Length: 113
Length: 111
Image (cartoon, rainbow over all chains, first blue to last red; front, side, top):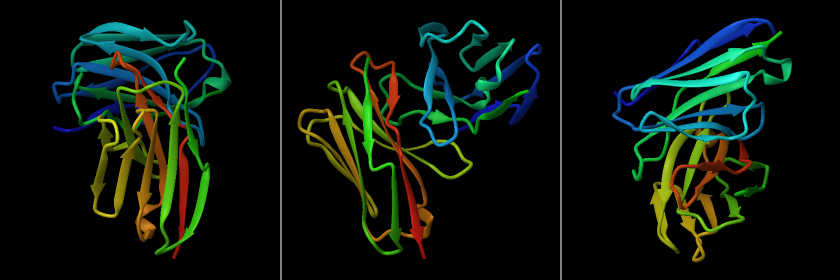
């Protein structure tokens, strides 16, 4: 299995809602990432988990809360988001030191209304 | 923090013409990676360059890493309509745990 699976593919949520994005990989990768991508912009790093421990948090607001339950799963919990948080949220994984780069999921397109 | 700049932002070419995108980092990189993102899609890994001065080829694509490990280029020979998309370079820091993307070059190919 050489895929990163993200669910849901599309999500519309109100500013008072709580929702979660899910990401799963079965490639044995030990690093997992959340990126945010706005239209016509590059992906921006949000969080890095390395061996299931949060190693990087790029000054992301607390309304985004990551969780890594095990080496195959990564969640992003969303609460009290703003319309400007609407974007494509990409999960990626990699094996540290590998020369095969990051494998990205197809993303969750989030709209906050 | 680490910054990665990429030019040009956009490039329109006639099918069959060549295309080059350039990438420059503010800091020395551990490695540089290249990704392609089709419209409506997600980034797909193309290649990783690690060594100073390294050159790698994939069919019509040629990738170079500068001697100082701060710049890189991607050259496509004889573009095809299937090459359409945004090409991103991404630099990994020396700690090896943070990949920073350049702004991307959007390639459009006229048949």
